[in-house]
Length: 310
Image 1 (tube, rainbow, N blue to C red):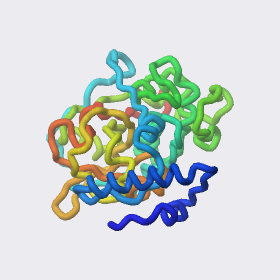
Image 2 (cartoon, rainbow, N blue to C red):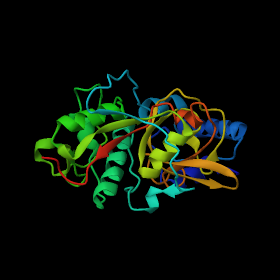
Image 3 (cartoon, one colour):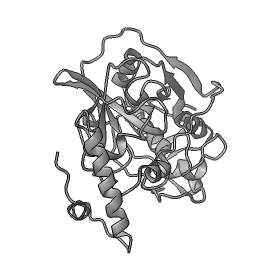
Image 4 (cartoon, rainbow, N blue to C red):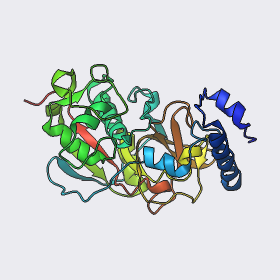
């Protein structure tokens, strides 16, 4: 791929600068050089973030904060592979269980978007109704379980917060601001009562277990995104640039195969203009901790009943 000039790229993405255009152009050109030197699998290219230094980008958007979990309620144990038959491919974004791609902006709230994505998907599968829940609720209200709003958090901790709250607010009643604010749960509309969430499960760190879990519904996963993600354009990421230094929460929504390469389909929270309309595909079957560490978080998902538990 021949990348455009800075001016053409800026026009393409509607960029407006206030006196720092020359500085941003220099950053853009440096990033283009890095892409051209490192695009070994052909997945790097046009991105809305090419005028941002990698250090600045990573500090703003990669905010997963793994911690040692106590594995007490609402932890429901590990999901382990059983050898059950699963579809050869599945895509929950085409089956009505995934909301439109959202954008976290420069707030380090990836963990909240991953949490909400698995809540939305698992609730749709349990009830037949897809609702959009509020990431802002987690940014503002989840304060006592290790999560830090725009400064990072962890999906399992967010599931724990949810179960002692009233439940998940709807996106419509508690919209995203991209910054921390005071908690507004008392005035929001609850779309998913906490009593309908019985807990969460971690997924064993192997390909078969994650495949079986994703075959049942979307799964929150953690990845190392500090290398290829910023400039991802499309295709299946096969590079060894990313390891398992987990720094970003995303959502596994399916898996499949293209031209003999198996992949995980992953929903990100950087808007539709990034990647494959907001999604990225990561090599499946790599073994170990998985491509970009996708198996090592560990992956997790909420367990949701079809009706409110009294």
